[in-house]
Amino acid sequence: MAPPLRLLLLVLVFAAPLLAHGRLVSDGLAASGGANATVLRLPSSSAAEAEGGMGCEMSYGFLPCTTTAGGNLFLVLAYGFLMFKAATYLSSGSEMLLQILGPGIVGGLFLPILGALPDAMLILFSGLSGTREVAQSQILIGMGLLSGSTVMLLTLLWGSCVIVGKCDLSENSTTIDSQDTQVFSLFGSGVSTDVYTSYAARIMAISVLPFIIVQIPQTFKLHSGHRITVLLGFIVAALLLLSYCLYQIFQPWIQRRRLEYSRRKHVMSGLLRHAQMHVFGRLLDDNGRPNVPVIEKLFHKIDLDNDGRIEQGELQAFIVGINFEDIDWDSNLAANQVMNDFDTSQNNSIEKDEFVNGMLRWLGEAKRSVVASGAYSKKFLHDFHERTRDEHNLLLDKDEEDGEAVGNPSWICIKAILLLLLGAAMAAAFADPLVDAVHNFSNATHIPSFFISFIAMPLATNSSEAVSAIIFASRKKKRTLSLTFSEVYGGVTMNNTLCLAVFLALVYLRGLTWDFSSEVLVILLVCIIMGLFTSFRTKFRLWTCFVAFLLYPLSLIIVYILDFKFGWS
Image (cartoon, rainbow, N blue to C red; front, top):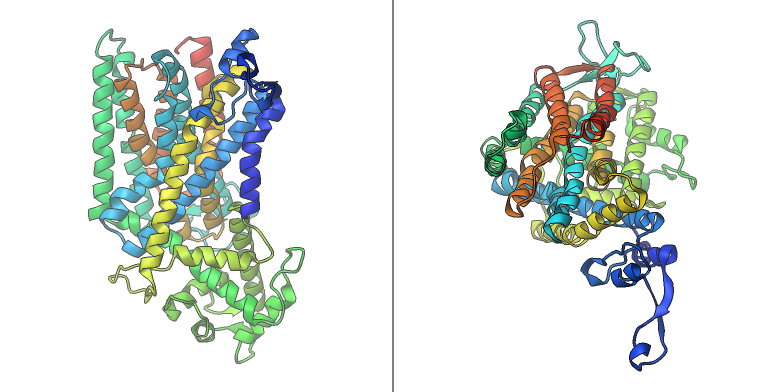
């Protein structure tokens, strides 16, 4: 996002609530003999109480607040956007650091925690401030975020990845990469993953154990032992988190596929940028539409023998001439990736139609990626390449024969750390104001805060990863789909360990009441159903996405019925 837009957003964050509920009031100095100056400000708690209404308390003593639904809705959107940017910075910094340091202690121990930091911060601040009664009320927001994030990942995002990644199924029910001619056949198309993805799903299913432990008193209607089970649940969640991180250190296949998940984008960005700079004409016209004649010129430039098809050797010769700046790519591996993405007929050559369709698909992915980051411009190919270059400027993992080498790892490491610090600082600074805005919006609209946080807050903390997952799944390859679903299952595992541990620590240390049976029930239902469904199979037909989609509204209905009809809360 351009600096002027960032400045405008910050101005609006402070100004909009004033427009929604502000007024000119006496500064109060006049009453004590001061100047008759007036200032534009929101009513303070005392002022609002004097008017007979409930007041609001400004976060940190200076951030704006309001008691109106419209003003609080704006604050939720503004603070939610800032949390989204914090999550984006943390994700980018984590990927860059992982590539430089490679799989190991940093990648296995610290980076998974950093990825879940925005959710953990919001949960922490939902019950950290105020009296015990206020904390008991606001911590429901944290539970809404925890359950909403888990349910969204395993339902809406999982189902969306199946739809965008579906391929035709062969006679033996295996998917045909990059071939999607069945349109919307519920049984004739689907996705496939590798066996490691099912291992990630099993780890996710095991991670629900702390939820089961903490629900023991409610399940057996025990009158004592509530605090003990909360403490025990916290210990088990912390041990599972530590075990998960150690498992990644000593069995780093999870890190390696996260690394590959981020690294594969750089070949695409480098080729697109080179084509934009060295082919006569722009790949996109002024309106952002693909320029097919220019793409055809690029095809003929690569097709050295003019036989109407690009062979592996011609593609490799073209890639050798590309300047990837500080990165020395293995041209054979890069050519294999392009061939795998473009050769939909699988005849070991790329025809003109396949090349044009492949370039259109790559341009669409690059454009969606840049637009999702809020930085779209006519130079989006340059912006896309700059970002992916920073993300992928390489591994010091010498065991992988990928032929890459880093030119300036120190600078990339510094930039990664700065991104992580910026993301962590933003998450810490705006978590509490976002929780307050959601709580105030709930009071103003009389909508239970759980449902607001269940639906809205995961969009702020998980939308960046969701967009990346959908774009990656749209490549319709078994390998990329395996990486995508592994990331989804890993995110849920961190919710069930790190985020739950933070939540249980708050409940125990502040002496709060554990009364979240319906919320825990929907988490268990979704995690167990999807966990069992994905742990023992690697092929999913298109109809399975509707099973996932239906679990999302079903979760909301279950919570509503149990809490408001049967009085579970």
